[in-house]
Length: 179
Image (spheres, rainbow, N blue to C red):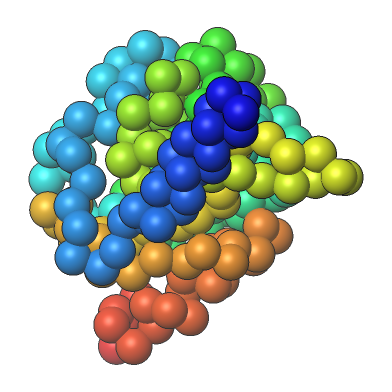
């Protein structure tokens, strides 16, 4: 009977995180964490910038690599639109450094090893794969204004075309090719 109560508490906790995903109007904290070099990543380090903050499960996996490389390849367009791209996963600074170097990533990746930001964003949840259940990061992308307030979110991210999904979402708001 005691094990059942413990299991129920875990499931309740999992559901809690899933239900608390950040929504439009919620605000990210200024301090997001530390990057691959151990440097603090703060929204205030990018005055006047809006943000694309994307959460992904794990460095050097096929989907996460495709997504990171897609953001890398489209970073200049996001910059012209006034956005700073920031990736977040629970991997270590060392893992991020190797991942970033291997794929020449040109934007910061936050190492959220204690899950502070991941849980605050509500993207830590029960996942199922190959008949196995485990806790993990749910791939999600948030778009914010200059103050870190969420303006949009993408919960069904297409890893190979993550940037294109955002360009479609943001298309009517920005003219990246002024006449």
